[in-house]
Length: 466
Image (cartoon, rainbow, N blue to C red; front, side, top):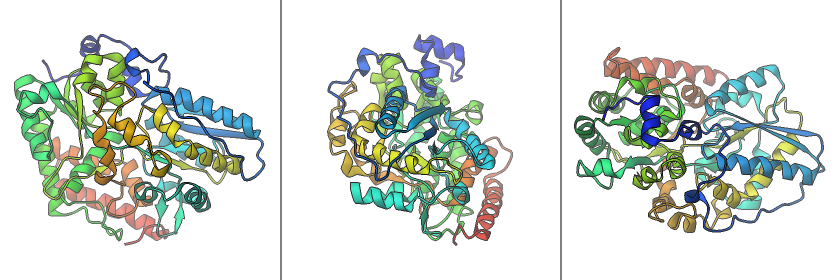
C-alpha cells in the first residue's frame, strides 16, 4: 500500500465521502450511527439563577468541535440558558485554525463577540482582555479546586491575573492501528519514542504505511513537537520563564525527528492541516498519530471496522520521561470591548456547572477542569457508553492528568509562549532540519533567536518573567 494519502485513496479506503468533513470537525454531524448511540441517558442539566439580573445580547465565537454531536447539544444548551435569564444568545462556530485571526481582528476593531474560545494558549491577548480572576475564584468556591493543568494554561503569575477561563481540557494520547503494529511485534503499540522510530520505520518499509506526526503550521504539529521536547528533558523555558531551548537535549530531539522523517514519513507532513492526521489514520494510511480520541469517534460512525482496530497509548517515554501537552485547552476570553461581559461570565459558570453533560455530549472528548464535578467520568471510561470495542478501550485515560502538562511547561503559558505557539516556531525548527535546509544545531540556534526575541518583547511589557 502506498504511503501517500490522496483524496481518492482516502475515500476509496473508507468508502464514505463524508468522512473528511466529519473528521475536520466543521459542524454538522447529522444522526448518530448505531455504533455511537449511547447506552445510557445523558446527565440531567442544572440551572442556578445568575448573581445579577441579565439582559441584552450575548455573542459567542468558538471552534467547530471535532465531535459534531457536541456542537448540536451546545447550541441548544446555550440558547436555552439565554431564554431562562432573559438574554438573546448567538453561537458562531468556525474552523479551529481560523480562530486566532478572528480574535485578532475583533480585538483590533474593538467590537465583535462577547466570549471567544480557542484550543491553545491565549496569553498573547492578555493586554486586550478582561481579567477573569474573580470569575475563577467564584468557580473555585462553587466547584472545588481547579485542575492545576487548566489553571496554568490561563493564569499569568507576572500579573497575578487570569487572562482566560479554562473549564475543560482534552488529553493527547497516541492513536495507533493494532493490526499494523502487530506485524512488527508491537501489538500494544509503541510505548517509547525509540519504539516509535524503530517500529514506524519497519512499518513504512514493509507495509508502505507512514507515520502521522506533522511538522506543519497547525495545532497537532505544535503538540507533538512539545511532547518530544519534554521527553528528552528539553523545553522552551524553565519554571522561572528563562529561555532554555538552545540545549543539547533539544538538538537531540531534532536529530531524532530527522531520522523519523527519513524512515517513516513523506513530505506531506510539512503541509498538513488539523484534520490530516485524523483522516489518514481512518483511511489506513497512517500507523500512529498523536491526537485526541476524535479520529476514533469519527471512525465509529464512518468505518466501524477501522474503529475497532484503533487503540491508544499514553505519552511516549523518552530519555527523561514521558509527557504530552493537553490537546485542547478550552480557553475562553472576554475582550475589553465586549458589550455584555456580565452575561458572558454568568454563562461560563452555568456551562461549568454542567460539566457532566459537557463530557457526555462530547463523547468523553472534554475532561473537566474542575474534576469534582464529574465523578462518573471514571465509570464512563471503564465502560464507554458510546460503543468502544472493547468497552474499556478508554480506561487508560483515567490517569491522563499524570502525563499531561500545560503548553508552557515547566513554566506558565505566558504571552511569549502563546505567541511562539501561534507562530509555529517549534514545528518550523523541526521542519527545517528534516527538509535539509539546516543541520540540527543551526535549526535550534535559529529557533533560539526567534524565541528570545519574542520573550524580550513581552518582558518589556512586564508580562513575562525570567
